Structures are given as structure tokens and as C-alpha cells.
Image (tube, rainbow, N blue to C red):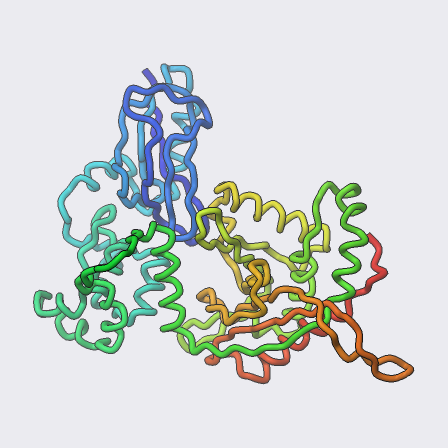
Length: 440
């Protein structure tokens, strides 16, 4: 008998834990190599975890809805003595875990609310997600140190800190003396977050009640925190995209025949946006306390509607280094993966600027909410034919042109009106200057 430990894989640079959504196998079931064993969810995306070996499931160490640290052993598989190599590979994967002994994960998970663990001479480990929420909600380090954790070895999880913030006002009298003072400090942040914890109002009349799914709850939380974090300002402009419309109509057949890819407006717009971000790099930044972090890589987020009606933002990495063909391939691949629920966790990581195409659904324009921790988001409206005044060498004429509104929401702590308007105007000018005779 060769027992292989299957560990929770690393799913992205900043992702430290995942929630078990569904087990596809039970103890005693046979599983094939690369067959999906379970579905997991992070705060970014849902993913499937395949089996690393073929064999029989002997043990599942976590239940549905359990939060599991990356690198922890989640299942054990009897490979029938035919897979010595996978046995050796399992501990190597576990080295990514914050815990030195992955075998201890199951007993700790089963323990009842352990006291907070203190590691590294009193320096308790916190995931980047937990620290980010603490900073946004005004939770001090003293509060974090005293907060009970339900994660592995008492580690504070996202669920723990959100629960703490939501109940901070009620929980303060029950805190021990050392944390009573710090808990009272950020009183102003408590009412905005504590509201969802209020008793639900009775529902009457001819209505249908729909419970929010997990992703919709994450989106709602993300949007509310963005509004609480950034003072939003939105600027508007319009662009004559007639040259782009006519060029795409002319080349879309030959483009697909030559490259095997359908070209949409999105990669054309992304090319122009990336060029303008290079001219206005402050648009491609984030705020860390009183430090402005300017990102050298331009990673464009592409807001994408899922079949469920929810929204996800896959990211095109290093867009400034790619030509139109490269952008087209990335846009198509990520859009198809999103529609088929095949996005990997890393596909939604490290975005520096987001674009949302509200025109897809017929909207003229929108006032989008910033995708934190970014400082700006651009909305593209529907392309419509309108009569416009066009300047010619022989004078002004009225012509039918393809017009599109653009709107930029930006964080006024970093982006002033002059910068926001200048960047937005630059994007419109870049689109209008598109060469209608451009070669494939």
C-alpha cells in the first residue's frame, strides 16, 4: 500500500487559503490521474483540483465549507504501491504551506476554537487578504493579535476578521481588558459594516426571495468596501470610432483566416488604453497608506459577465508588451475561460487598471466602481451612429459617424481632475487617430 497525500495547491501569489465547495469523490471511490477531486473557491475565482495520482480515496480531511490553508493535506489516496514518485512529490508541494508539518492539518481543523497561535517569537502570521481587510476597516494590530482564529493553528481567516468587524460594536464589552481600548478606537467604521448583521425585515406581498450566492456576496462586499475606501470622481468624453468600426468590418474575415482568432473591438481598445497609460503612469498605481505605488507593468482587467449574471475580472498581463494579435488571443482565451468556468486563480490576479464595456448591454455610458486596490476604471459605452459636425478642408459638414461615450471613475486621493480628464481625452484621441488602412 502506498498512501499519497494530496495537498491544497498554490493558486496565486496572494492567495493563502481556499474554501471547499464540493467533493466529487468519497472515501472508497476510485480516482484517475488528473480527474477532478473537488471544487474550491478563493476570494477571486472558483477552481477545480485534480488528483495527482490514480488510486482509491482513503480519507478526506476537510468538509464542505471548510477554509483550508494552501499546502495543507486535504485528502489521502492509496495508489496501490505503484506510484512511489507521487509520494515523494507530495511533501515538496506542502513546502509552500505556512505550517511546517502538513500532517497536523486535520487534527487542528477538528479542534474546537483553539487559542491564537503565536509564531516567530510572538509575530503571528496573517495572510495578505486579512491584513488588507484590517487596514481598510481600521482594525489595529493589537486587535488582530487578540482575535480568535478558526484557521489552521488558530490562524485568523477572512471569515474570522469579517465576522469580527461586523460584530465589533456588540463584542467590545466581551473582550478581555487588553483589547477593550483598541476595539473602541475605529468606531466610525463599525456602523457601515455592521448593517448587514441587523435582523432581516419581514417580507410581505407578492414577492420572490432569492438568496445571494457566494460570488454575489463577494462582489457586494468588494463594491461596498471600494466606495468606503476611495472618493470616486467620474469624468466623461466621447470618441469618433468610425475608422475602427470600418477597419474591423473590413479585416475580421481575413484576420480570422490568417490567425485563427476572431477580432473584437476589445483588443483594439486595450491597445489604445495601454499606450495612454504609458503616457500617464499615475493612472496605473495604488495607494498604500501615504505611499503611492506606481506599477511598471500594465495589467489590464477585463470585466466579464458570467452566465450566472455575476461578474469577474480576468487580467491581461503586461498588455504594453503585446501587439494587436497577442491582445486578441489573450482577450478571447480569457473570455472563453470565464464563460466556461475554467479560469484559474492566477487569471484574476495582479490587475493594475480595469476596463468595463457597458456598451455590450446597450448602455450609453456608466459610472463604474473602482476595482480595489486600483485607482481608476474605464467604462466604454455602446457604439451608435449619430450625425456629427466634421471639419474638412472645404469647411464643416454634417456626417453620420460611429460615436462612443467613455467614462473614467478615479480615486480622487491620487488622481486629480486634470490627470483624470487628460488621460481620458488621450484615450479618445488615440481611438480617433486609428489608421483605417492599417495592415494585418
